[in-house]
Length: 508
Image (cartoon, rainbow, N blue to C red; front, side, top):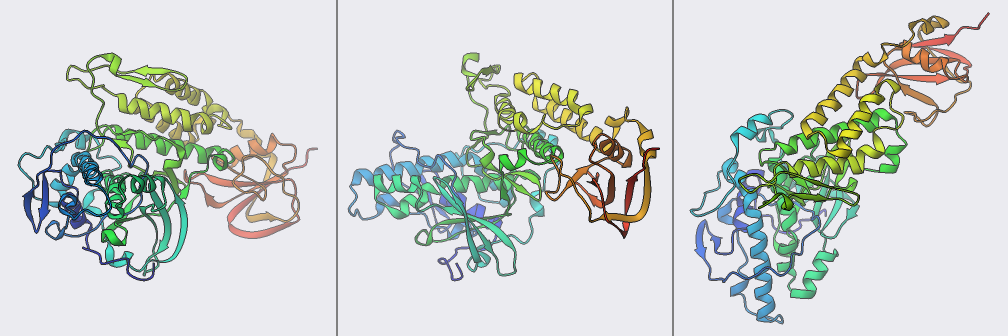
């Protein structure tokens, strides 16, 4: 990817949204040179829905008056039959219509000219007012990555691929590492489309629709637990279409998380709850994650981040009776009320919350939790398993657990006299000798645990017959708690101005 991938058609993030609106216009209107041209196309029933799995890539950044939309109806027929060509055009039109609701904010934010008769979702100011917490303003996007930077990506490494998109790691000219998503040319969605329509360019456009949807959503939904969109570019269709640049994260490995300290597992669950609280009150309304799996998330510096939004739904399901508002899960079902306006109230957030319980809380939250916090954790587990509490109440419970853990209030009944059994050597740390292992530890080389203070470390050491000393240093965890290194013996004492070594006194 050291050479140009095709002539890019723009530069800025804002212009990219404008162009995408022109590119993914409804079937009745195509943008040509900034003007609207009506086409003659009869509406047909939808037969296929190809991109049902995540695409990967990025959007272009160019003004809408420079956009060029393919008019398949006016192209000369090749080996494909007229029927197949019309079928492909119908699929493209359906995808464009599905994307229209997501462009409402782009029109408002980026100044894309509105069209009479266009049915856009209105921006809910009262919802936006409720979601100021933890939101990154759109105006804070700086140094957006565009076509000029993406043309010369180097040191490319393959990260993964799905039905619709492929993800690679690349280094930009200034040394900035990003994850790049684009259409997976060898994916099942592209393969199936080519089998049906025999049109490479048309299939690239069709399969890329979910990636374009994801980019539009990421431009609007901004939160510390949502992956950051760094930029995007729309290449020519011949060069591969859409490419998107994201901050790089590492895949969420549940087996590895199960072997990590409780504090790290709690961090993942807390980040997930903060994300779900935001999604329940987002600027677009209540957002449901239809494909709620650990593989949809990554870790960035230990923080959980949602990386796939292409299967997100931004509207509550419609209903006529409460029988239309049933959530079906493998082991049980839940219901939500059907409002007088014909909407299943709270169904999206209930779906998200129970999936969080199924895929995350059950495995990560209770095990090896501090004994004093277990009653609170059990209460959270029971309420989410039965959906007795909403997202707001559950997030408040998580924040309370965090407060108790960081402040050390959960240690009220800890005997303070145990620290008297140790001799404190300030400015020293132990080295050499024997180290024993404990689980779960922050280090595979020995027993390293997070503690609130020296008294808690003394309590842990006194309860283990192998422990003879512990050292508190300057290293702290994400909660600000210091790490204590426990040892069964040592051969040396080394100077360290940031450390305090505690040596267990011999009993008389």
